[in-house]
Length: 104
Figure 1 (spheres, rainbow, N blue to C red):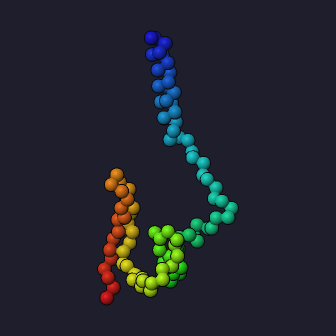
Figure 2: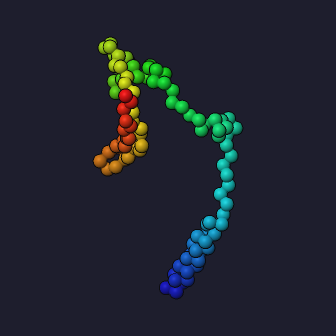
Figure 3: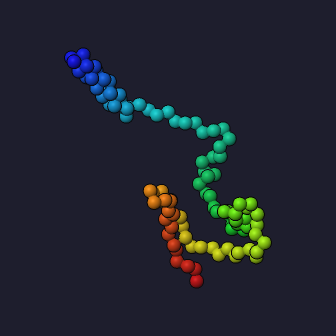
């Protein structure tokens, strides 16, 4: 019984030493891959026009064959919404959007 208590004290000392030394350790920086773009190049992203995605939009996402429909294509109306967050809960996934004022 005494040896078990001594072992517990030794292990508690090791855990305490590791815990106190945790913040003192420097985390090495991960070098950027050689073919990665410069950080300034990724900051100025602008969304391409919707016409750029016409081929993607013409193919229905949930259709088994993903072929364009024979019907007249639907007209895309730009929406004034911003995706704020995607929430995953036990009841399922939900998108949280913010609707902006419609342009006059």
